[in-house]
Length: 128
Image (tube, rainbow, N blue to C red):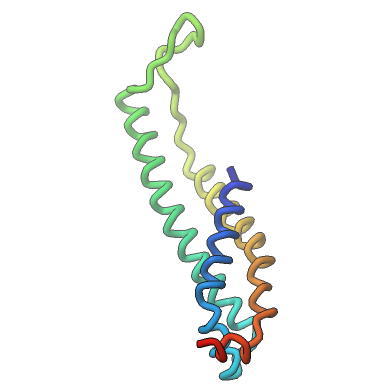
C-alpha cells in the first residue's frame, strides 16, 4: 500500500509541477533558487498528505470504534473459531504508521521534485 501511495503522490506532484511551470519560471527569473521552489512544492505535498492522513485516520478510527463496540463484522465460528472480528486499539501503532508513511513518502517525493531544476525560466515565460 505504501508503494501505491508513493506512486500516487509522485504522479500528483509531477502534475502539480507541470501545471505550474510558468510560475516556476517566473520565480526563477525573479531570483529564487531551485531549492526554494522545490520546498514550495514539497510543503504543498506534505499538506495534502497530512490532509489525507487525517481523513483516512478519522474513517479508520470510526470503523474500528464501531467494530469494537457493536461488533458488526461477523465471522463464521466454525471456520475461524471467533464470532466477530476482534479489534485492538493502539495509538502508538497509528502514530508510528502515520509518521513513517509521511517520512517515507516525503523522501520518495524529493526525487520527482528535482524536475524543477531542469525547468528553464526563459522558455517557460516566453510561451505565456
